[in-house]
Image (cartoon, rainbow, N blue to C red; front, side, top):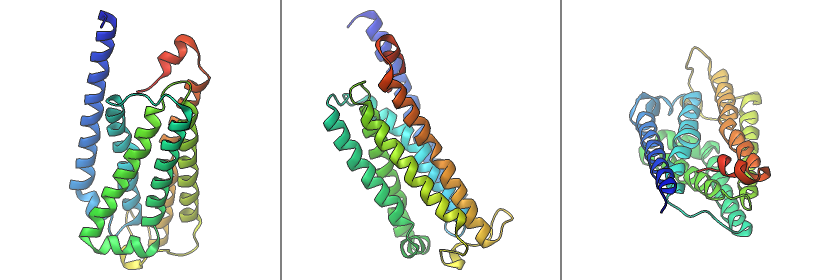
Length: 223
């Protein structure tokens, strides 16, 4: 290994460790702090917790994981992994927000733990799949899955924001942040839409890498 390569490798390891520490710290603050309890009776707080897990902690930890994995070399393989991860993530997100399951998780601590663990697992699968599709040949797979995730999160956020009535048990969607129950649900929808922005930013980043060439491609690549 040349001196330059060793320097890059050392820098990458430091970045991965920083990202991993940041992701674990974020999860700790989200799950151990008061937000976890509040999220079980406030839909807006639930969405803050959800977005914190999938769009803040998961990409940080996914970055650290992807650093330890080889880049996916073939587009077909990258697309397959990305689509499977993206479908899994979409099913988890939409599934746990079906009123019956959402209300059950809010009322049951074991189900709440399973819900949160599945959010993290699905998000890690998606971000890791996208971040290992990091060559110019495979970046298109990351563009597709990240944009589709941004799209379905935005669509679900719009449904919540525009809903004319409560979709969940009023006992579990109480007033919070100075808002009534319905406005609290609407705020949750807005937070969901905002939570899609990291996926949109990552889509643009991957698209930049897809069209870049030469030195520009190497500078833009992640992880």
